[in-house]
Image (tube, rainbow, N blue to C red; front, side, top):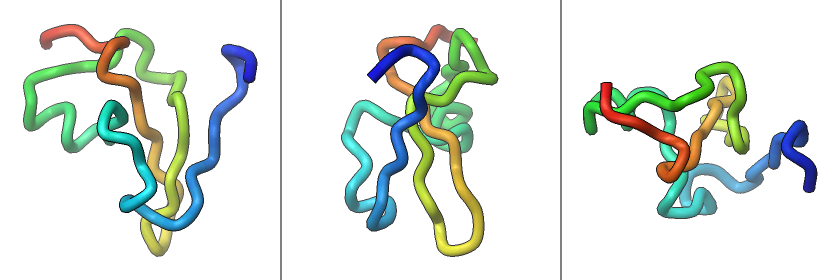
Length: 61
């Protein structure tokens, strides 16, 4: 997988690894992604695709 590819996680949130978080989770933790426009993966939440980011790519807001 190259840096420009986004992984599609199928099967819902139960299949999202523990080191990936959505924007809402990040805000609750006081973190922001370094590059807000580059998700690592996307997951389907029943009605839309949600971007998820790696914890290691985050910084305190």
